[in-house]
Length: 296
Image (cartoon, rainbow, N blue to C red; front, side, top):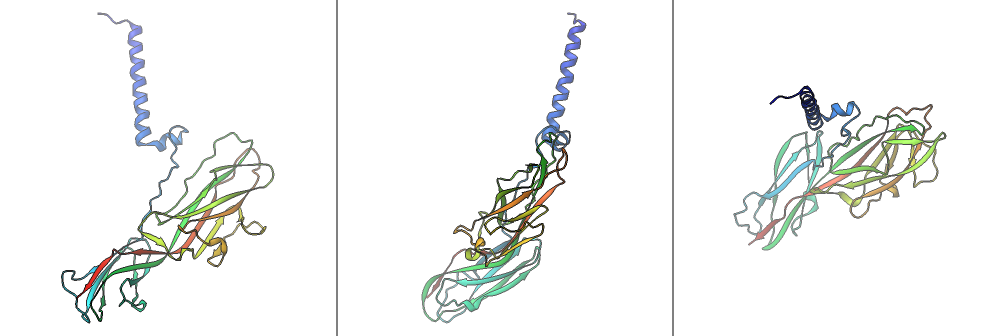
């Protein structure tokens, strides 16, 4: 059977199309940033936040199979691991049994990646059964940096965007209802956004139900919306735990409104990259497993 030139040409075009489509598919799945740089394909500015507990903490009886008698000493082994990139000072306190007093707290400072174990000794004057529990608390800081640009409302081009930066943390910080590209009118425009702080679902909790301090800074003009009218600030706004605005809800969450002043963009263009940086300081606590104590 003889194949004419038209059929050969059509077959050749089909092969070339299959190669092109296959090449795009490979780049799309294995090198999406290349397509993005050409203005096509899936966006590469999607970040995934990973939450974690900065320390690992456990407590257990040193000899769980041995009997415990009145006025005899028994030991609990505490193990701490620092997963954070900076040193952490941890206060470990026992509770749960009548013979445990608050003066038995232990303070330990661990360097980054350091592991330590130590023994706490206890005794009771009479036979009883109870359950011990150990709590480890430490001061910690979480941060969040959000990038955005102001765009002239008449600009029809593409404004580059950058993903927000949120290091791994047990505390989730975000800004609701804000876009990475904010259209601005010919005159300054004030918009109210909500700063959301919420503990992630991990093994720990925020101590005392309140933040210690909060810092909000921006390359553009910002001020706290819940306060009386303030002059917009380019610098850092610091709020301490004495402020009513920092009272956390019962689940440890905070919603704080703030105003961002959108500056006009000169010409049919967009502003250079702007950012809002939020840093929160708080006390984070973790609890060990329950340890049953039987004094015979």
